[in-house]
Image (cartoon, rainbow, N blue to C red; front, side, top):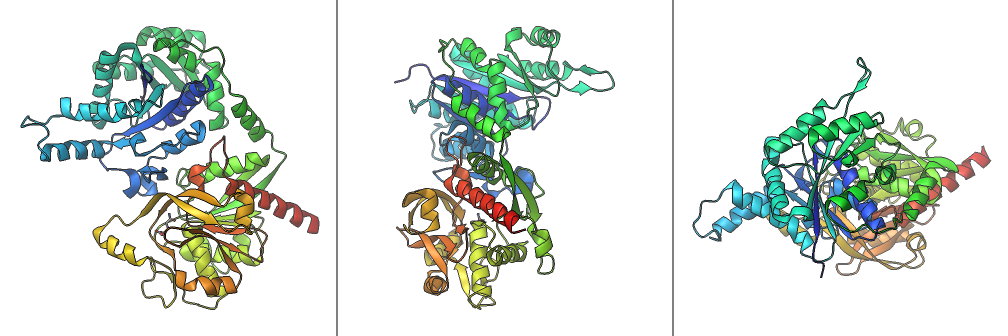
Length: 542
Ligand code: GLN
């Protein structure tokens, strides 16, 4: 039984997008390197119950956990850095907090009292944080608070931090992440925004213990001292977080700045001597010293958004690093691909990845790209809608079912190769018909997929409604599309692969969610390897 779980809060000031998620994940990595077990949680102050209903323009990618929670993309960073699975408990929004409180109120659990922000909402927030500590699995619970201090919607969260700090003393600490801008005209770094941001925290009763300063230029001792003096912390607790070449540098930079040691000091935790980051260092070394590069086309409808395919981007980085190659991700807007330009748009690609998605926008472009990959024997990975498009493309262009489609887009198609399951049709009417989270998949042993996984029974995460229609299974197989993996419980097609092709795999699940620095996903490693082989074959034939 762990007696003193330590709770670390990470708040942000001055500006959004400073990288609280990466700082939280980096701190977790350092603490793990010292032998502690850590979990990271995100509290999001918006009113949606979860980000599942938010479109990528609003909130970037929706990350899915083993237990099927649709969560903030920062949880992806947490898992990729810490290699520890997260769950629904790791992402809580204001909407969920209020929903819980209101349902307790309806059940009469507040015994007739007036239900208020303080104490009822703040107690519920506290419960959501401490529930992770009470699992007895962790020495540290790191809780990142979304948004920026001073936002109206952050108030109950900051108030909860105040209460927890007051109740728990040294078992609770606050890291405040701010921006120290460089004013070119003055030729100086400016500390005033940080001072104001800490004042805003103080107005709400919270004294940060550590201040992490995002900056484009190194902070000299004078600046650190000034921030320390105005913000009531020791100069060693002012940590520089300089812009990094890659997010994977940040744990190493934070080690230099001794963020872990400061946290251990502030929380009165004995400091273990050893900090083992050897695997991480090896990864970063390989990432920065590739022996070559390959071009992988990412075909999707949100490619212009930086964070819309975050986990896919990072899984490609992991797969590339595993092969000691740099992956150049070439984003291609699927809506812009048509029969006349597909050859020029996809020219020079060593691999083609067709992204997941919902709805019909850009789907014909995805199908054209897949036809090109199939016919030109370019390594292809189709994920979720990408796999469904591969089935549609094969039906139309190989099986001659020219109007084949998914019923998500064409309800009247004569050949619904992708369809809703009967049970799902009933569920749809009730809402909540999505297949989410981890499901079993059994892989046939003489397949390319098996070669990549080197095992037959896997579990992968899902986020979709529609399925491969089993009525078309035999005609696919007879014509060269193998069913390489199925879900044994419901006999659902999970993986398809083309026989007469060097590397062509479509998966109904999302392998990208499970790729981490420590364990790059075998499908991404295999896909990048196939792209490297394709590149070397095409350069020798030239
Ligand atoms: N829209 C498809 C479905 O619901 C695919 C979803 C996805 O790509 N995540 O089945």
